[in-house]
Image (spheres, rainbow over the protein chains, first blue to last red):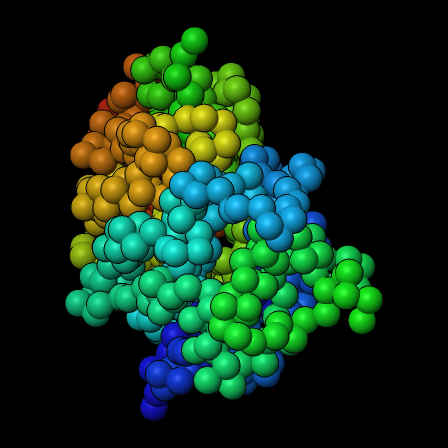
Length: 232
Length: 232
């Protein structure tokens, strides 16, 4: 019997790649997504497509509402910042799209899910390189989370070792795309945009679209998504 | 201007006492409760009464659904275990009423709330003495959580120190009742029972009722709640 892994799955490029990597390592996968006051359902639709295509054992969507606290462009009514492709992405600056304590909240639900299905392996697609502005994407944060998690649960008390896997932590977006492509990921199923149109087509100008496009470009590949301005 | 504190408030004896202690220490208090698939709303009604009586700055109730994972008597359809008052409570055994990763999930929402209101102080009413069976009530767990939290958020990155306050961690239930009484807590507003009746009256026989009654008895006081069998 293969080991079980809980995989946080947003339906974006990173988490979709991580899901493929967990499967490639032989895990039976349990996907976990969140409906957390996003302004669009496009992300969740992508997560469902990806989970289905990957043949996960189970896909749970949790309703959580971080909007009750306010505080981020992704959950409140602020505008998502847009850039031209020639803009420099700000370094060492916490982006306005930061959701307070988001990865901590997400990992905590993953921990509950793992405990229930009897898994000691959680996969999350954080990258310290592409998202240096987010405190909760850093390796030292993940290490501290893992340590806490081993004290929080039955598994830890009973001597098992709970692990938070971050296979993308040192990868650039281009390297992520390369790994996923090697594992047969169909990136046309994914969604990365903070501000897609009614048909789910990405804007091509938000931070997330720019990082994604840069990744494909640096990998020497073409993003299979159709962007709003492509006229396609 | 006084400092802000986020206080996890279930509406039970412990969290109500902790709220009074936070206020007594001079904090402006932000209460946080959860609707997490409880089988009864009595607990949340108590939390609302307590928050109102304590004059908190704001009381947020978060909807989260731990039922999607299953795995506990408090959120699933299992029976809550009942005892006679003469039964010994099991030591060093994780109770069936354990909710997977509950305090980790609750603290993570508190962390998000704290970040949004600009607080670096979170209060939680865990006791290592009364709940030795729960891994996530131990001091070493809380210490690890605090360390993780300081790496997770803007506050930590910007050099502030985030603190998880556990003023009940070494107190018996009797000592908790004594502290709260000294601070003027009205325990008739609180609710501790895992299985109250339709009028919200506690059963007097679940683990939580037994601990509460034992606490009042050892403090030489009478619990102001009306129990189901009291005929009152």
